[in-house]
Image 1 (tube, one colour):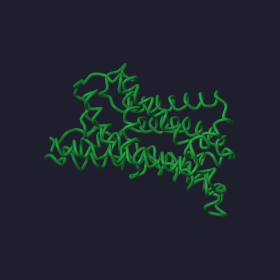
Image 2 (tube, rainbow, N blue to C red):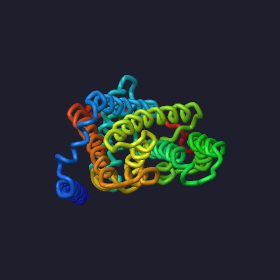
Image 3 (cartoon, one colour):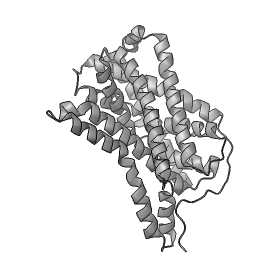
Image 4 (cartoon, rainbow, N blue to C red):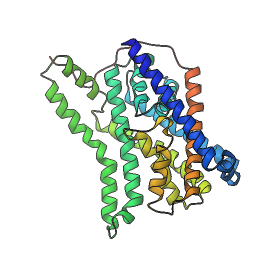
Length: 322
């Protein structure tokens, strides 16, 4: 089993390297790196610095989201939660088909002693929150053009319903608790642990919704501003590109490093509201390189300063079967 895991890991990294080499060759062949980087000449250095700061602020809010969601994490270790977010982010970007997501429960268990099944439930909950934010933003921007004649009041109602949708976790959690209360066994225990990562109180859900929207607003607003400069787009059009790129990273499948799939997401959504051409694709590549560069630097910092392994039992939100 260990050899099989090692072989799978080696194949994943080999595939990542192959995609990276192919991506670099394609850039050189179709544009040339010097021509590709030319648009950065009209982007102020201060703007780039603000984008980097906004990205780090977004990661910090996400770290607090984990810190708040997991009571098993000792208080005062928010900084270690930030390292977990940075490391999980870069691993997930580099490995194909979301395989890097496995690092989240593994790191939660190794650093904080959180049960891996519960960590997987927390990860699922956070990813659903992320997907919901992106879906609502895409609906708000695309709704009028995708559905001509859509009443503005109906669009507002749909967006508000999307924002409030995570509250459905409360009845799901309650119903699951009633079903599992009279059962034991490995399967029931595993499901109980996974569901334990989902909030059971309305106050927790509201906080998670607020933190999710804060984190994504910081990130997407900053990326939209710099992408508008790179692609010579209006800010709402550039926002669609930022949403498209990040939407590609939370979908079930993406290429290693997001090379190709990130650019496809950017171009696909911008093409709905603006003309798409070679210049837009080049700007999407530059945006991706900026995002990836920040992620790699953050991941390197987290890897070099990662905390020691700890073991600590965590409280359960769903009581075990009697």
